[in-house]
Image (cartoon, rainbow, N blue to C red):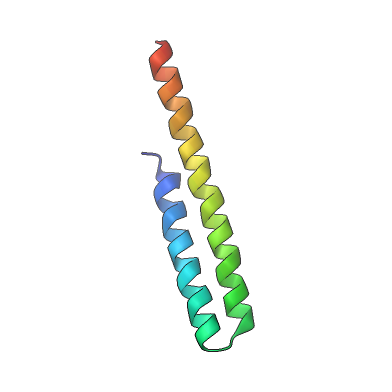
Length: 62
């Protein structure tokens, strides 16, 4: 498993926590930062998935 998948998933979770805390404390900037953090984590996780897929395709060709 590509390291980007794991790191991206962690970033997504941290973002969700920040979003929830921001919502509960009525801190709109923290809530927004949490949403952005989730999107960054999602992109990183998907990048890792694509790298894994490419590696799998390459392995089947050899």
